[in-house]
Structures are given as structure tokens and as C-alpha cells.
Figure 1 (cartoon, rainbow, N blue to C red):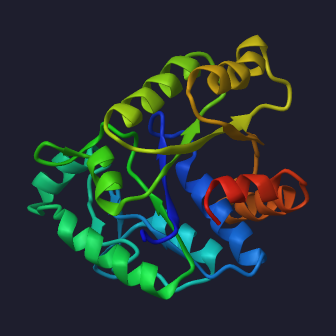
Figure 2 (figure 1 turned 180 degrees about the vertical axis):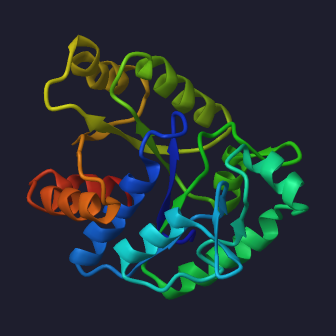
Length: 239
């Protein structure tokens, strides 16, 4: 039986995958689930005390209440570009077997593991291998994070269609960052996504203005914890 977990991907970069993954980790921790997190490949890492640090992985660990270690973020790359190109510049070869071994160690220690991808499914990681190939290697269903604005229907439907063509299961979609006063495009997008993607919309998450990401995560987790529908969402995610 495959370990319980989810692979968080996005319709594009900058749609809020890390916030969604961290919020789910915080929510599970609040409900007594021992949750592990993983950011297998991070581009655009900063240097700290002579080491490259993944701020995304650090936020995930803070939300889950666990220590940041190499298994959580095995590949940390300097340039904020596509991982395959960033790895080439750094002289690094991204090896899926190393990522799988790290994931297996995490899965043996936690009840549930949340893995955050890089960008979208078609982002190249190593040679001809894509983020989609990594999700398949880890044998995890997808949680697709989409933005609410114009163009999101096309991007989300394409992502879910590509996933199915590649043999990946899509557990659901979260529309992240809905403005307080949505326009016609934002108002109609979730219904269209739910109708066309072949996967349920598991949440429409509000936009938050806070600068501190952990504050955003805490507020969103508390908001989700107070909703009756959250138990259904967690069941859809295999928790």
C-alpha cells in the first residue's frame, strides 16, 4: 500500500502552493495528525551561513512543527529559474531515486506526508523528466492549486487533463487567493473548474493581506478548522 500523502502542484508558479501546503500541514497538526512535509526541489534559494536554504521548506516545517532537514529539501538550487536549468548552472544532477529514498524515510516516520512540487506539472526537473514524473514516482495523488482570476479555467482544466493523460490521480482543486470583492471572472471560475476538470473543487480560500507567511498559514488553518466541510475535504485527501 502506498504511503498516505498528497502532492501539491499548481496551475502556474506563484499561485500559492506553499501557503496551501503549509496550511494543510498546520491543520493536520492541530487535529493530532503526525504530518511530514517535503519540498524536493527548490529554485531561488538564498545563502545562510554558507548553506543554501529553502524558505518554502522552512515554512512547511514550521507549519508542521518538525525540524528542517535534508530529507525535507534534498535539492536546493541558487537561481530562481526552472529547476533543470538551475541545477545545470549549479552543477547538480537531480536524481529521482534520491528524492524517493528521502520521501520513504519521511513516510516511515509520519502518518501523512505533504509534498510540494515546483511550479506546475510540466516544469522540467532533470533531462526529459518533469514534475509530473516525480509525482508518479512518489505514487501520490495531486492537489491542484489554482488562482481565481481570468485565465484560471483554461490553466486548471489543462493541468487536470494533462495529469489524467499521464496516469495521475487528481484528488481535487483548491482555488487560492479569492479577493474579498471578486469580479465576474473570479465569481464564475470555481463553478466552471468544478464542472470541467473532472475533479472536485475542495476549497475557495480567501486572499490574505498579511506580510508574514506564517501568520497567513495560522489564520487560514484556524478558518478551515472552523468549517464543517473541512472534514469532507480531508477525507478526499486521504487523511
